[in-house]
Amino acid sequence: MPLQPSSSAIHVYGSLDASTAIQNAPRTPMSVTIHPVALFSILDHYLRRTDKQDRVLGTLLGTRTDTGVEVRSSFAVLHSETSEQVAVDMDYHRTMYDLHHKVNSKEVIVGWYSTGSNLNTFSALIQNFYSQETAPHQAIHVALNTGVDDSEPAGIKAYFSAPVGVFPRPENCVFVPVPVELRFHDTERSGLDLLTSTATSPNSTSNQPLSDLEILEQSIQNVSDMLDRVLAYVRSVLAGEIKGDPALGRYLMDTLGASTDDLEKGGFNASLQDTLMISYLANLVRAQAEVSSRLALVTSA
Amino acid sequence: MSENNRSSLQVVSKILKHAREAPATSAHGLLLGLDLDGILEVSNSFPLPHHSGDEDDKSSKFAARYQASMLRSLKEVQADDSVVGFYQATTLGAFFHQNLVDTQAIHHDKLRHGGIVVVHDITQTARGNASFRAFRLTAAFLDAYKTSNFNTASLVSHRLTFSTIMEEVPLKIRTNPLLSSFLGSLSERYSTALSDSPPYAAADSALPPSFSVLDLGSAGLTKNLEQIAEALDSYRTEEGNLAYLSRQIARERSRADNYVMKRKEENITRVAQGQAPLPEEDVTRLFKIPAEPSRLESLLLLGQVDAYAKSLAGTASNGLVKMYAARAGSNV
Image (tube, rainbow over all chains, first blue to last red; front, side, top):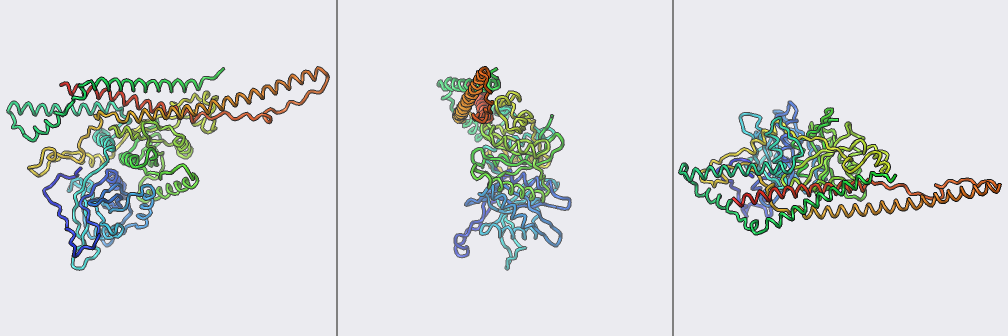
């Protein structure tokens, strides 16, 4: 899912020119996807920074595909920045990577993150270091704007670097933007729903566990609201208040014209009986288990 | 005790990710956070390496080393580094396992306030309801566990059934303001600058609404039923073992009793005849009465059966609601 409004900008990638490019050289990433875990870790790290730190940075772990980079997780790395120099704790970075590698061996270093969207000489130096770590692949840089400063809205940008100048030097480089998307597995979706609903609720807390029926009720409520909205739209089109959009009409037709033949042809009763049977069975098993555990406590005396 | 427990956002998503990636139900890790007398604030977590049953000594040493260096590293970047419990991924709500109980019992001794275990149900999450529950061991169970005595008498005196092994602790999910605002901007709808984009792309957001809960399919039911049958089978095997052992105990005991009785009768006759009575020997040395078997395993298995059945019942009732909803929808 895209993180920013799609813009009219086109991302152009230099084609591999046979005369200059080394054979089998890895291609530059064309897209970056980020797992929410990485985002949340970065934000947490930002919250826990010391007063002196302006921004925080850390390593991104993930996997590479042919065309893109998938960021799966991240960890914080210590660094200090003054007006003259920047220092990144490399030992720490290595230890942390080893630790992560033990648990999840599929994830490798793909790049680094920092908060704030300020790209400067230091960024180029750090980028240079991470490029060595990820060689022969390109390191990516993810700049996460936390939205704390009023000047810039919260958002995420991803870059890879290209050398610049007649004589390439580590402190000079061009950061080329790459489109970035949020990606997670379908099964994790409900977790994110839980988080967003928590974020919007008062006090930013929510109780657990929710029963399945409550969630179902919310969903059905949601669908019914949508139907109401569509109905209102269709009515106003019919009454001639708004001009109908043919594309919208098509979508509505496709969505609402779904076949329900299967349900009508006795399928409903059959599966109703199945479901009732299962429900009965489940309750029977529970009752038996309860009785059995009580009987275990009865002494023979 | 009104112990409460709050998990932060980060932990939730970390557990979700780990649980999905790890094979089967082996995902477990440590919860880090603060213990604010009565309220546990879980603020971070990290996964523990997956260990396979063998070479216990080696893997436990490895895990301990891993844990220590991870904690040290986290401390360096100002993250919370005190362990407050652990998490365990499970399927279909059946989280009663010897391992879990053992780990929690160890934690109970080590941590202030005993620590908690957060159980995350993968199947329920896949169905659209991210489920996190917090548990800790009850005092009665811990008492029995300390003496590692789970025979019938002990179960009766502690009134232990599978439902009294663990007690649930209220769990709340909390987000901090920064994350809330960030999430808010993620799920916000925005319209693109492009004028000729199709309607579905015109107003998009990073987190569009999902309706996976409304899925009518009942694919999970078969697996659930299979697992109930499996759990019942292993419960029956365990019960069979227990029955065999208790028969053996009864047999040995009656033999011992017979022996004692015989000796007494003999002594009476000997005294009557004016002879010195034979010494009453220690019967325990002559007959080996096996120790009464532990019923913990069967208790846990029964708990599993109950949990499977409970989640099956839940799914079935949900399915009913969805079916009627679908029919109502199609009849309009």
